Image (cartoon, rainbow, N blue to C red; front, side):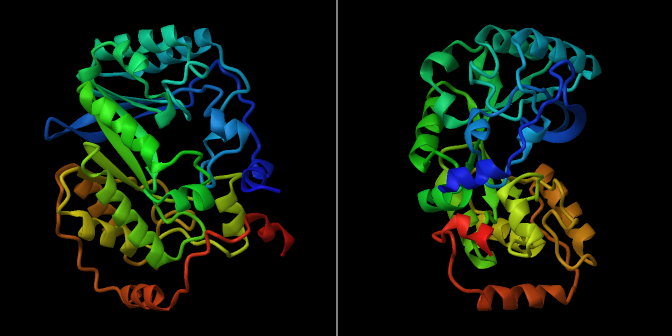
Amino acid sequence: MTFEDVIKRLRKPGKRSPERFISTWTEQEVLDGEATECYVVVLRTKGCYWSRTSGCSMCGYINDCAEEAPSENILAQFEEAMKGHAGQRYVKIYTSGSFLDGDEIGVDAAQRMLTAALARADRVLIESRPEFVSRKRLESLPEPNRIEIAMGLESASDVVLRNSINKKMDFEDFRKACELCQELGMGTRAYVLVKPPFLTEKEALMDSVATARSASNLTNTISLNPVNVQRNTLVEFLWKRGEYRPPWLWTVLEVIERSKDMDSRIVVSTVGAGSRRGAHNCGGCDSAIIDFLREFSLDGSTSPPDTGCDCREQWLDLLDIQGPMQCSADPHSFFDR
C-alpha cells in the first residue's frame, strides 16, 4: 500500500447537492496597506482533483464537495452568494480546489464570475494548485493585475511535501508559477503549513521558517496556516490515536519572530486555534495570543503579549527533547498497530 493509497482509504468524498454554496462571511483584510472589509464566498464544486485521487494528509475540504457540479450550478451559487456582498473592496472566491482547473470550473464560468466580482470590488483572490497556473490561462483572465492567486506551498522541502503532506508537487512547481504571476503583474499568496504530520515541534518550526524564507522573494503575502485537524484525513487518524498534536501557539509566535525581516507580508490563519483540533497551548494563555495573531495579520504588530504563562517552559523543553523527523517512516505501518 502506497502513501497515496493510505490517504485515499481514509477519505469519504462529499456527496452534497451542487445547488447551494457552502458559506459566505465577512472578515478583515489588508488592501493597499490599509485594513478593509473582505467578503468571502465558498462555492460547492466537485473539489480538488488531487483530493479525489488521493489528497493531502491534512486536507478535509472534500467533505463538503459535490460528486458533480456543472458550471451552471456553480454560476447560480455565485450569483446567490454575491447577494450578500455589501460593497466590500476585497472579495475572496474559494472552491475547495483550484479555481483555474477547467475541469472543476469551466473556463467561461470562471471568467464570468471574475468579471462580475471585479465590477464590484478592487481586488479578487482565488486559489489554485501551481500546475494550473499557465500563461495561457492567466492571460485570459479579466484585469489580471487586480487578481491575487493563493497557492498551497505548505513546505519548501520536497521531502516533506512528498512524505509528510503527499502534495504531489515540488517547490520548483511553485517557484515557476509565482514567477509567471510576477511577470504578468499578478499578486500571489503562499500558504505555509505549520506542523505537517511526522515532524516534531522543533522540526515543524524550522521547516516553516525555512519555507517562508524560500518563498519571500517569490510572493507578496505568506499565510502561516497552523494545521487544524479536519475530518476524514490522515492527520485526524493520527490525532485520534495520540500520534499527532496540532502546533503550539508558541511555535507560531516563534515562526513570526524568525520571519519578521522578510519582504513578504506575513499573516496567520487562526482557524480552529484555541481548540483541541487547532493550534493551542495550555488553554490559559490561548486567547491573548490568538487576539495578537489576528492583530498582527492586519497591522504587522510586533509586540506579542507577555502572558507569563508557565506552559512556555514546557514548550521549550519539548523542543529540546523530541527526536528526529519521522516523515521517512512507512505510513501504512500506522494501520497495523
